[in-house]
Amino acid sequence: MTDSKIRSARRLLKSGTPPRDVADDLGVSLATLYRWIPEAAALARQGASQEMRDARIGSYWALALVAMKPLPF
Image 1 (cartoon, rainbow, N blue to C red):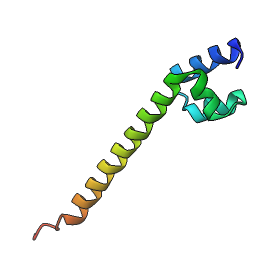
Image 2 (cartoon, one colour):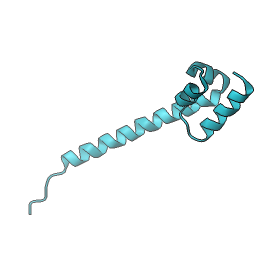
Image 3 (cartoon, rainbow, N blue to C red):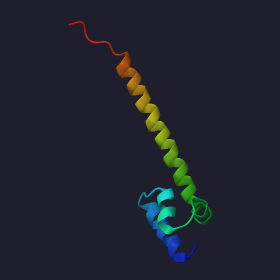
Image 4 (tube, rainbow, N blue to C red):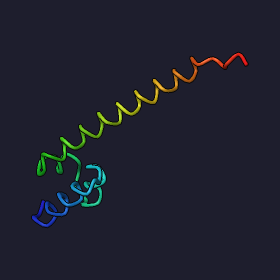
């Protein structure tokens, strides 16, 4: 990767762009992005674990709503 691509990738990642989108925008593979910018892999892992937490919380809310019974009046 060129220096300008590395700078662009870091700027995009810092602004919150997902690593896969950054790689697509720069025309490189995700593996190449991770090789040249290791912090991108950490961001991807962090995003994946946040998505899992959000899904788990959503499931708990759905179960809580199903378990609620209507009031008797």
